[in-house]
Structure formats: C-alpha cells, structure tokens
Image 1 (tube, rainbow, N blue to C red):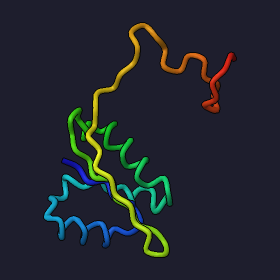
Image 2 (cartoon, rainbow, N blue to C red; image 1 turned 90 degrees about the horizontal axis):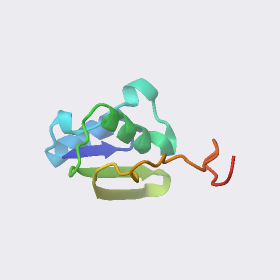
Image 3 (spheres, rainbow, N blue to C red; image 1 turned 120 degrees about the vertical axis):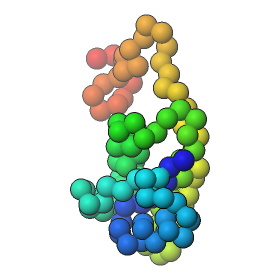
Image 4 (tube, helix red, strand yellow; image 1 turned 90 degrees about the vertical axis):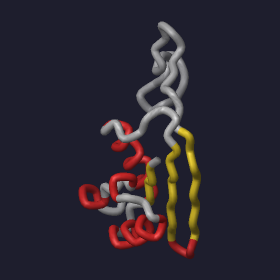
Length: 103
C-alpha cells in the first residue's frame, strides 16, 4: 500500500519506485523538506505519513533502507490499530526522557 524508503537521494527513490512499478502517490518522500537525516529518515517519513492520514489500519508498508558499505535492510509491516488500556494514560509513570519510574 505504501513504500517508505530511506531519504538519501531523490533520484534513487524515483528510480526504485519506477522499477517496482509503484505510482508516486504510494511512495513517501520528504527529502525535499528535510534532506538526508541519516538513520531518522524512515521514522520521520512514517510519522509524517501517519499524520497526513496516508496510513490506515491493515495497510502493508514497505520500509527499505541502504547505507555505506552496501548495507541494506527492508521490512514489510502490516499497520495495526492504535491501542491503549481504557481509562489509562499511556505516558503514566514515564519521565520526559522516556524512563519508567515515579516522577
């Protein structure tokens, strides 16, 4: 349903999408706004796609990355429903840095 590639180079993103036969609206691209943010490119693009409503429960998302030394990684994720326990604050007991404990 959606491809979220590492945002290192627009030319590579476009060539990959073309080779996969993916229409542009199925590929998340934000390199034009943020540049290459290294290891944060995929998480940033995913959050942006979720906030824009491009990711729906049940969607299949291809996350794909490459790096120096010809390292590559890819995963297909089936997006689920957001869940919390009824009546609970999901951040309860967490400190601003993410540690668990009493404030």
